[in-house]
Length: 478
Image (cartoon, rainbow, N blue to C red; front, side):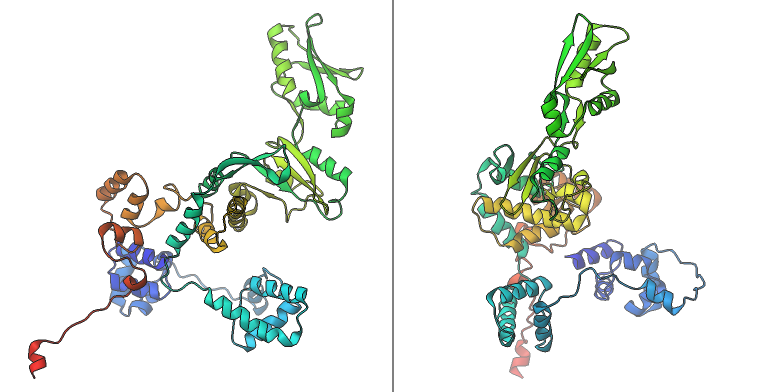
């Protein structure tokens, strides 16, 4: 699809189709053609005249020749050293990789590592590694996608058909009754729409090995996560006779949350909504006004009750669950960036159910994995079996440009090059009217647009063009 898009972009700049195909076949994208010199273009198109013509149409600017700086061999090596993203495979996986290379075969790293793990679990001897590789590579080759396979339609059907059986409900996450998480069809819609904030945001917070089994430390971390407001730990009353607000902290609750009366006073003084003066006497706190007015005191009562004393923004509640091997903290509300800063939190396993938030904090690759995980979890929770590769294709389409796009008219579907394909999705008249005004051309390269105009699609047998020129009658007579 990227090849056709580049060719169409070049054609729109008055470059003939044959030349455009030559440039693309040479591995050049639109940006490469724009930045290329006349000499570079000449190597591809053959003639200087043609190269100058392309150079002019692309609006390229001639670059001023700059003297090349001499670099030492050591510096060049340092500049072009590519850091290793993954550690080299080791152990059984390395032996399996060596066998693959000897047999002239190749397997993805993850498949190699999973195979090695299974081989180790089953106690298979080294003499059978060659047979294992033969079986795995045979199955791997059989499951590759055929060229010209309509993977988009197959994936849409494979996800959409089970999607009609999904119920619309909210269930209690991981057996924790206090936290409800939207699932079913509404959840799947949230994921593919790339909603910035899910209807029920939550986090699953894992802890480091040193503390994940220590109940007291886990409780302390949980208390740091959830928002604690003044009304949760103290009684707030209005004393009309003295014209002041009286705050009586509950010492038991303060101890459980690790909060002192000084912390309460500090947060009340920081609050821009509490207008009065805060004082502490005899274990209680008092808010007084310079001008003792009932309206001002009443405002201070309401604002003081809702003042945040401790915790992270947007995290309403934190619930601890004992899995047997470790304690896990589930939160109602999400603030991934701040959670990862807390000492004791395992940053490699802690995650949010919002792919957009994951993208903002950890980047696009993590967001892709979050989309796959959340979509699969949603389908599996409903008892629906969908091949992970279909979900991976959707995740790839949503993230392949470096950010998270929705599957809709403002995202993936709205960026299709075909006018008819966009019109078939939503707001048909607006797409057609706009295309007519600006003079867009539809090359009919995709599936939807060919079906609309009633001609064979460019897939399967329709991807092959066969021309037959029958001999004339005179030639047969001769």
